[in-house]
Image 1 (spheres, helix red, strand yellow):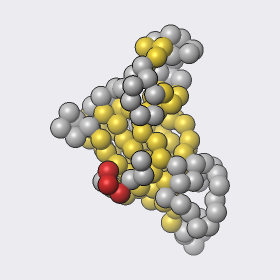
Image 2 (cartoon, protein in one colour; image 1 turned 120 degrees about the horizontal axis):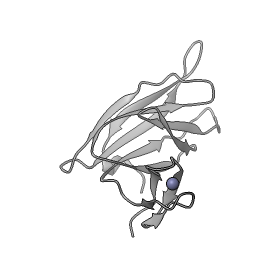
Image 3 (tube, helix red, strand yellow; image 1 turned 45 degrees about the vertical axis):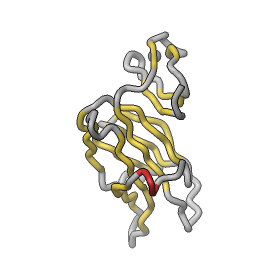
Length: 133
Ligand SMILES: [Zn+2]
């Protein structure tokens, strides 16, 4: 058992949240922690945008993140690019994270920055003590 973890099936690409090792419901590939993890916390938005952020890791979709939600995404050790998008708006300062046995967890806070023409999503590094449980 472990905390809720978002995984992507390495075989068929199905994204789901799991709390224990289990086979992929689509193709039967065993799913479990991949080594490291990225925790993303979407800070509350005062402008009441209820639309979920779409999560992309290395260009691959990894589900959604609602307002004030947090998710742990299981990823293999190595370098990964984190990108969030909101609807058609894909303005985001993509963040590159490095996961290793020495630093298996990277925490990121995400919020919306109001712009003159359009809003953008801002990612900033964080620490576990600043993240919700
Ligand atoms: Zn699968």
